[in-house]
Each structure stands twice: as C-alpha cells, then as structure tokens.
Image 1 (cartoon, one colour):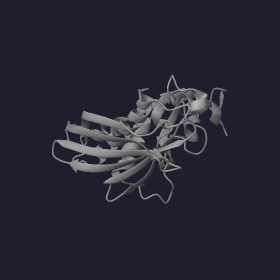
Image 2: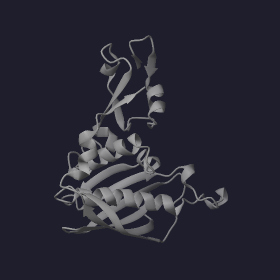
Image 3: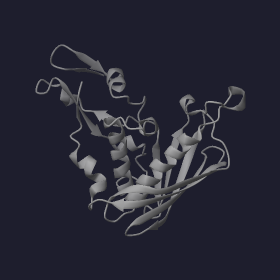
Length: 231
C-alpha cells in the first residue's frame, strides 16, 4: 500500500516500518491510519494501538484484560521514549493470561544481537544473561502492576535470578510469570524461563516491587499519549 502526504510525497509500508522501527509481518506494534495522509493533515502520520500489537490471537483470553492493556502501553512507550527496553519490546509477545490474571505467559525469539560476547558459534552462541534478566523484569513488572487493584506504578526493590541452563540464538524463550503476593505496598512475582520448544528450564527469577504514585498512574502514559509523530 502507498500513502500520499498531500504534497506529492508517497510512503509505503516499508518506509513507515523503517521510520518507526516496526517489525516485519502482521505483529506490527502499531497500525498506520491511512486517513492521516489526507490533505487536512499532510505533514503528520497518526499511529494507533492495534489488538495485534500485543501479539494476541483473536481467541486469546488475554484480550481485553488489564495486563494486555499495560502490554499495549509498554509497546508504545518504549518506542516513543526510545527506552532501554525497546530492543526487547520489538519482539516480546503476550501469549496468554490465566487464573484471573494471576498467571501469564510471554514469549520472545532470540536473535544474534542477544548472544554473549564470548560465546562461539560452535558452542551454540549462548544468549547473554542480561537479556534474559531484562525480559523477566519487564514481563513481571507488567504482571505485578496489572494485579494492583489501584493501578499504581511500581519500582523494583529486589530482583534475583538463578540460571540453570542456557538460551541459544535462534530459539524462542518462554516466560511463565506467577503472582506470589499482591499487598497494599509490595507485589511479588516469580518467573520460570524455558525453551519454548523443548520445555527445558533455563532460569528462575523472583521480582519484588513497591507500589508508588496515585491511583491509575500505571496507565497515565497511555491516557496522555496523542499517538501523533512527525514524518
């Protein structure tokens, strides 16, 4: 598809994907709204969140829950702010939510850029532990905040990881997060990281967070985001 900007310029999907660092295929984190290229607003492109942005299938029970809402915001916010987590959010998918949002599953494919500096190709190019830790922290942060009835922000007070295996480039990691405790001040989640295909356990992490801020502050960014960026 091509879009006209009203000034003789033309933009196709590939250009827009490159401009906003969006992945290939159907799981684009944003859907481009063609109407934004009409003469009324020629110099701007409007992005709106898509249900597919969260990597959810139409039948996925995660659709419409608080965690999927936070996940969609996570996709938008990491790109809009070019945050450290943007290299994770481009690939992370929310697969399912169960047990009244007490359990959730995320998946992420491992790329060449994730490998450890000292990992040799003949050894299988092991993934850096910092990548796995970042995935666990981001996934459990969203999971904990989604279980706070007051929808507050939270900050980490403790995060520990135990590695019992190795992740390898070309494989897909699966993170199964479980809520251990949600209180008025603290929330605790445990994550089991495994190879999505073999089921082999790779790491176990436990994340404790302290809730801060006013009620509904967790979705403050999404509420204020106008989703308009200059081309």
